[in-house]
Image 1 (cartoon, rainbow, N blue to C red):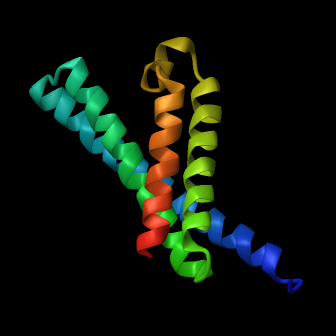
Image 2 (image 1 turned 90 degrees about the horizontal axis):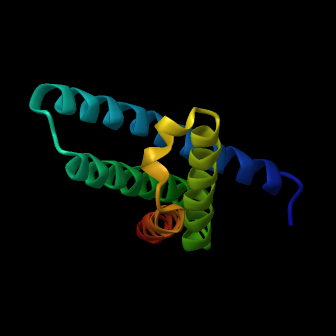
Length: 123
């Protein structure tokens, strides 16, 4: 294990998570505009939010897998897990009315972890 490996791992995961959260913000902004414009149902919005989680976790896994170049599935999985953990921490920072997106925490965890793993495998 080289001395620079832990730093490389942290940089890789950090950059991929940051980019995925920027994408999350953009996609949620688009979703908010669609909600405002078309008055989407609650079920449609919930499905779209889950799709945002899938896309962002996949991207985080893909980017970290590309950067690490070995055991890509592992780095993708870790990216998905870290994406989920940050999502939970952010949702806990806001009042309960804003926590509707994480109603089924286990499902969201599996979705983020699986999406990140698939992204890493396809990197």
